[in-house]
Length: 221
Ligand SMILES: O=C(O)COP(=O)(O)O
Image (cartoon, rainbow, N blue to C red):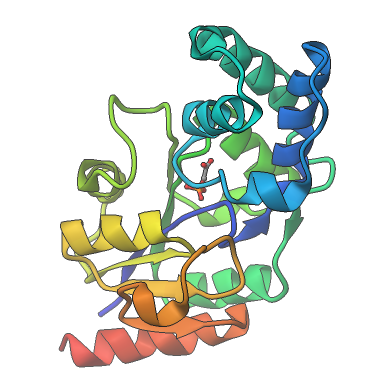
């Protein structure tokens, strides 16, 4: 028996914060507002780009009526440079290769818009491992709505047990609501202590992923 595994992207497979922060700061520069530190913008990642821009607007005390325009500007900056400084976390490529060899079917369920998500996956050589990519703008809804994760699983042909791998409170809530085992990567963009995030198992080294998946498969037999 083999597993069907959906992965979150930002903070789980790739450290994309430098490019996301650069896009948000280029947007602020466009309108003559001072840049924000990367660590501040890290707090705003997780619920998709429109939500990130909303939080930047709120933080900077800007008028919310500009949200649509500022979201488009941020997206344009991000589309122009979504993989310049983004890197794959150590061990991810090797772990994905091993999971593939185990026969796992894999996909991406991310709140990042689908276009840049696909671009990042291509640029970092990750794309061949995934049978589907469902982004934050692919459906009418997004994580933590479990429908986003359910649609991602439905997009691949597989009968094995389902697993979701992510790094954040949003991912954990999504998995819980979809009643799917959740593997928590602890080195991403979570804001709460690990003990406060519901998870089936956690890992800090991506090379441990194949063993964790094997354990879940054994427990579901
Ligand atoms: O773009 C975001 O807000 C987060 O994207 P993720 O779902 O891949 O973590």
